[in-house]
Length: 320
Image (tube, rainbow, N blue to C red; front, side, top):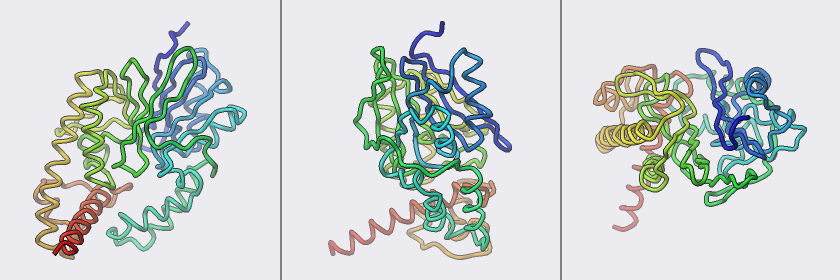
């Protein structure tokens, strides 16, 4: 028998890399994140069968945030549980579970402003149609601060970590300091080599909360995020690795913030650079990755700094 509360990583195939979910073995078993539409049948079901567990017995579907590679399989998984599992997401990201169109709106409002790609919006819409298994209403909306009981004395606390998305959260197994953070800890980014977040200040505050308050003994990441030299972490980090990943994430954000501040204070300029209007940031950081590769973390994050800069400028203007 597997000890209750044991965590099992589940990988589902998708393109050039896999998608990661986690099974928490408990009297009311939980799956953290669901991959895309095909992930429940192709990854989760066989992984549970391999450890003698059944998808029909899953009672909690815990979503760390609303991006398609984390919520795309939610409806399909919910169906496989006989619609008995409770689906949990932060209220700020719930629109992305309710509507495929919300993903198109997110693209249009953020990175889509910079990609110079007339067909980009249509491709995002097509991807949402293809990999989101169904639009649905969540069972439980959270804000952070809630405690969920998985039975047998096993509880999971919800911690709001806005930054990567407005509704990013960590689920922490109480008493064990095992934290599931989805994409809230980016280190130096994943395949694109750049960390992605929509709100830089909130992202940094979330990292500090993890480092100073949660202090994870085990940290479960949504992807194999990378060190500065490009080598990936795994998705299951021990205490020392978790501390290192959080420190490096904060250091990376600090460097990007300094470069972004210099660019924005000088005034962003439209050029022929693929990094336009933020080419000085790429140059200052030595970043040579493809800024158009979805989900375009370079433009996502730099747009976040631009919005932060504009808010600060408006506040100063009102005070004067």
